[in-house]
Image (cartoon, rainbow, N blue to C red; front, side, top):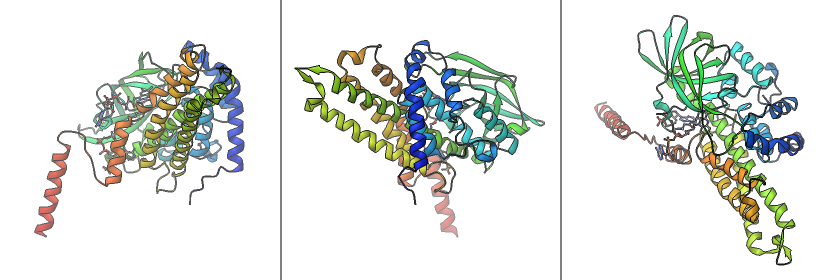
Length: 414
Ligand code: FAD
Ligand code: COA
């Protein structure tokens, strides 16, 4: 049974996170956006508060929190500063979760030590020709003796040039050149030769974190840095994406936080700003906008909490894929509307860079795209509610139909 009530410890955690977020994180937010510099001071504060590596188990030196605990912190951070919310996601979900659950003892120790020391790992999936079609990636890992040699290029990698730990998805080939599936490879920037940080994207929002290309030029990964998924390389992609569901819930929570921050500002401003001789909060047109925002926020929060709590209740240590996708679709689209409506409440001031509203709206714009677009996630949800595979390649349905008719023929022959 899942309970939606926060425990006393979780309420305390939320209060502690809010204190930090409304202090130094809020103070730095505009400057982080303007300077486009990675917020190392915020990272230090997150680390000191114990918010980096919250989901790392106690035996590895972490506090052993669950995904809901971590997301409570993410929401508070994001409600003042989107990039800091995203750092809290990647320091607690995604790559670090994959290592904690799939890694060898030495991999877990390496990752835990780095993250607890303030590193936000990078997860490297997307390529210029394989975005939504991630399984069509061409970055390859060729087995050579006791090493894998990685060649290829990723782009839009969050934290390129600042992250130390990298989880790289690559197509795996044995010594004879036969393909084995997709695997995960761990590299540490500064230690791994052949890992080059390429061009940085000039992004619309979330400007405090670099999004860069990563180029692998004969990057050597020793066998002990292969993150072997439980069912081996053959189903490696499915296992790695299963771990990635945690990050989808985290991304949804950043969108939630941004919307919650915009709503909080709009609520306060509507009581202060006067027109026609009275606070604008007294106009029903705005009251209903604010009421709608509160409805959307509550619904999004409940869905994301359910998704976060599903981990461990579904035969997997990670959040359920359907709930994670549903949560991210709903919250990312909700955040577009809520941040835009909240900006509207500010009138011209909302459009000014002297106020936080345009930054929150720019930051929120990302979440229907990164981490699986709203369209792709609908396909994920559809395939699961329909209980069928929904291949998106042109020949996918043909192959499926052929294998189905082959099965029918075989069954008829039995
Ligand atoms: P495309 O796949 O080219 O899609 C273009 C459009 O077509 C979209 O609207 C899409 O929804 C639609 N579309 C495509 N296929 C279908 C289909 N079958 N049905 C319906 N519509 C479809 N990647 C990483 O690996 N690591 C990161 O750290 C990372 N961080 C990111 C940070 C930011 C700020 C952003 C913006 C992206 C990040 N990404 C990262 C990449 C992100 O995951 C991809 O952008 C995303 O998966 C979409 O790929 P694409 O941009 O190539 O779009
Ligand atoms: N959780 C658990 N399993 C997942 C999964 C997830 N999020 N996504 C895919 N899988 C599994 C599928 O269930 C399937 O397993 P099956 O063979 O038992 O059916 C397997 O992985 C392959 O998935 P499939 O949907 O057949 O792959 P595809 O080649 O059609 O590609 C995806 C579709 C998965 C690549 C696409 O849905 C997707 O998620 N794209 C976005 C990529 C992304 O989020 N990038 C973020 C980078 S930060």
